[in-house]
Image (cartoon, rainbow, N blue to C red; front, side):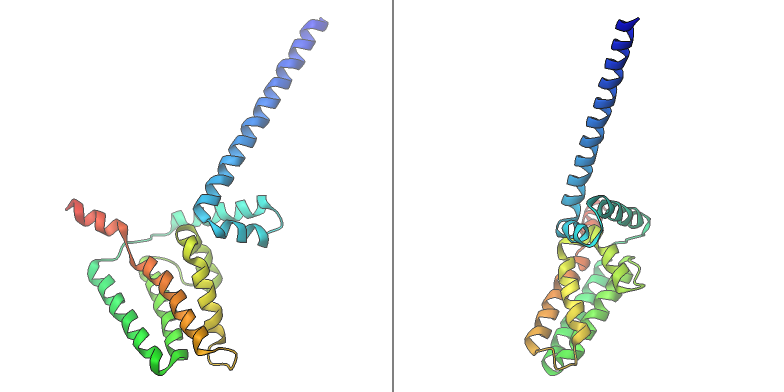
Length: 187
């Protein structure tokens, strides 16, 4: 009888250890996947949350929300129109840097909307963009922060120029559309 209980205890212990190892491996794989997908946004979220686990839940929730969005490609004519609109905004910078930065912000928001991203507020926009555009999201944050100060004595022309460069980084990423070019190639 003692031998049977010893075997049962050993088997249960092996199963528990195997389950813990499997759970740890799964968690490490999930963490690595999130780090690769979100890049610098992963660390930023970890710093903002109470724990790494809470940050990973937040990032997974962003992915889930993003899956429900209907992100759509832009026809080449629409992409061309946006490119012309951006050139116009850049031309306005010479005469009115503050106004041009505001126009750049509105143009990026309009482009986001046209692609299918909700535009209900800056924080939600950032969260939604983080799933597919995490590598350029810091550009958007920096530009948005400068835009919020535009028009005050606290912003220099150089900072406003920097905001335009930052907006352009996200704008170009939103404007390019690999799915459309591959769809056109199949026709």
